[in-house]
Image (cartoon, rainbow, N blue to C red; front, side, top):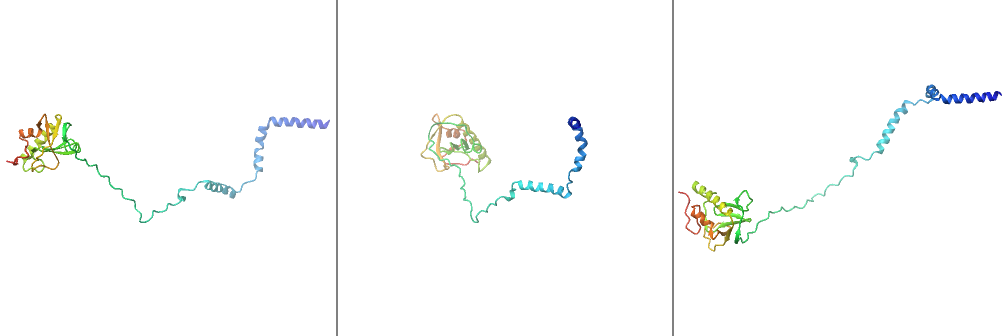
Length: 215
């Protein structure tokens, strides 16, 4: 009978201990902490150092550990690249009818459809000299009167060329004073544009005896 009472007491005590396990563990926590072995200071300091060593060993090699690039061979130079030459316009015949275009003063249009002087202009990247007239000069003029008249002839020729379609014809005899270039006679409706400049006192016939423009 006594043994049954003891067993009954143990069962009842176990049930009560299980129902109050949280409070019991809280009371016994200080006792359990005192039972753990103390960690020495040497081991505490060694643990962070060991962690740092393991971390550094796991890192990849830095950029300084790259394989060095061998230097270039002495005396070896790169081949010189030839400079690209600008395209040179080939002078074509420029003889025919119904040429047209908007003309400007040279220096603003890249030597294309521009007027250089009262008797010289560029058309389709080709220099054309009027073979039947000689106009006053603006560059290297002998006096102010020649320079002023030469500028007026330059403006007038630009307007004439821009006014509509014109023809370019060859002239077999150009005269001794012809400037280098393709010699042509510019006409519109059968009339020479150069003759218009002559009639307005802005040019002289090229084959005639040349006289100065200064008084």
